Image (tube, rainbow, N blue to C red; front, side, top):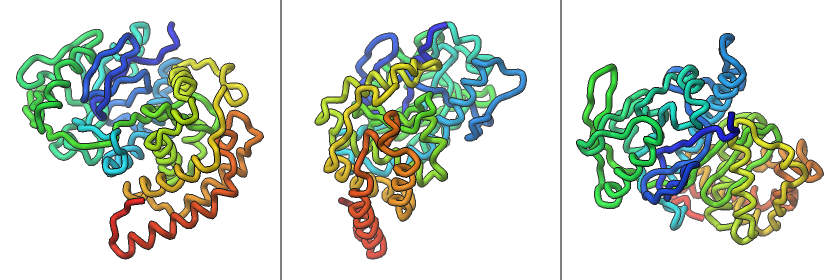
Length: 363
């Protein structure tokens, strides 16, 4: 069985679609080889989301799906509420993800169907909170029957022609009419597009505590997800990588290709963890780049409704438990935590003052 976990297309964000099997230009869809969302009713954010009858691959899929569900729940307000700060990286979106059993490598199709019940037709697997799709009532489990009256693609590689159908509509229209199937009955629905930051958040299938961005994809390792003690803490880490992306820090570090390779590896069902020894070729961010990202990240988190008061303590705890000497850990890539803490605390006070006085949360 191949290591690549899936060929995954999500209708959440706007950027060119990179399928695992090729490249198609579209302004609506995001595709990446990433982790699945469980169908409605199967959510569980515990890492022990397994069933006794599952085989090892089904257990791995369920565990990864539950962690990805938590990541995307935390990501939603970060993406929807920060388009003004994402500069040229904000796009329109429909606001839901869809896949079928062939969204994974062909060898996994039967396992995926047995695990999550996906079939031939694209099925809504996640609805982005705050999006147009959420506002008009799109639900997980809805099947995609038609796009503007034309039958929606089914079967293998259904995402690619679906992307080709939707891309020109997004460029020309403010709403898109879809026909869905719910409870065995067709449902016509017009979905207003929503402006959002055009990043994808992906789960890294590894226990080391770290995060990576290639400026379009942001990967949070399983180890870092499990290290966080609340959604606020997870939001701090996710917003920090968003800030690095918005500020083009991977490009300034000449690390885009390296980060891209790391993300491609860690989203696999069986990543090659031997390549993650040491710092895996990643250069440590200079202090000033981290200070700039720290400041912007706190604004991103606050605008998304997260409580930023404990952010300095979170970064201090992370650096204490995973110091720079842990070469595959977060602090090795983001050193000088102690020297950044005063700037973090100053920014928290600045944002809280703006919140109290009703000023716009703009850095």
